[in-house]
Length: 115
Image 1 (cartoon, one colour):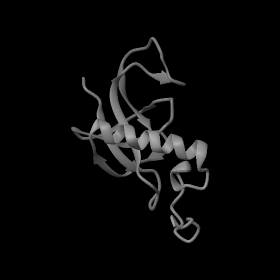
Image 2 (cartoon, rainbow, N blue to C red):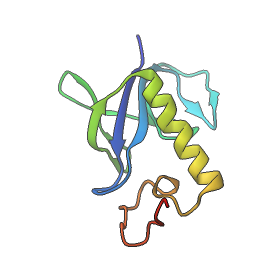
Image 3 (tube, rainbow, N blue to C red):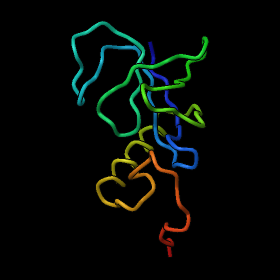
């Protein structure tokens, strides 16, 4: 089965992050385990996949364990790769960037001006 790619928010006013839903063995810390396949989702730049709760027959991840995905929209694989790479960059090089902590809402009063 082909993976599905989405962009979603982890907080009500949070930044968009990349979400990939796939059917396969579990992935822990970037390593695929020898287990039975299941529907899973990788959220943003995390290297561990999570089990998925499906909503009806739609291929849309609704709830990932303790994470509620908001504003879920399908995207292309290229856009998903960009979102994941941008979040990883922000976490390493720009800790004050909203994508560095996607579980928090964006506070527009504390974001530095781009100019």
